[in-house]
Image 1 (cartoon, helix red, strand yellow):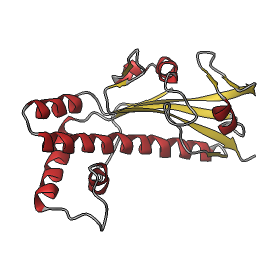
Image 2 (cartoon, one colour; image 1 turned 135 degrees about the vertical axis):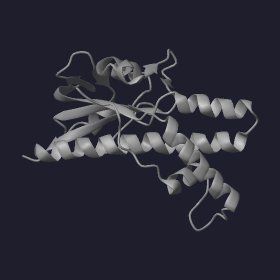
Image 3 (cartoon, helix red, strand yellow; image 1 turned 90 degrees about the horizontal axis):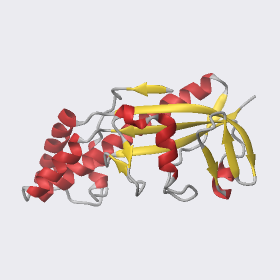
Length: 205
């Protein structure tokens, strides 16, 4: 298990604007929009707490659409995931959050009636957590490369081949409470700006 208490992320203004629905070279951005984006990016830098944790396991067996790992605490089921991991001999489970302070700040801005700032800060949060996930993904990719593996694109519960209820199993495996995360009975992640994912390792030997 590897825990990173302070992920070294850099916010991307272009991505924040994309989350807000603006398209490069197609949207007319007013000075006010750009000013507000800069203001909320500065605000976010003061309150986000980007943290991550990951664990890499051996895949011990894939049979009848059930994937078994070297840690009995987790197993995956489903034809889509079994097919996706069919070439893999390892997989990394990861979780990233930027903390709850930004959630509270967004709620406070909405309560104050400043929806423009609230929506913009929320978009900054979306970029921040994605930057954190990208950083850990690159870290895992480098680890895999050093051991003569290549990695597959990451997959998250709730998207396509992977049901969202697996969030609870990943949370237990990674002990996500150590980075301030939890999973509700609805399988929603708290804080809201949090992500869980899996990255498959394929041996090059």
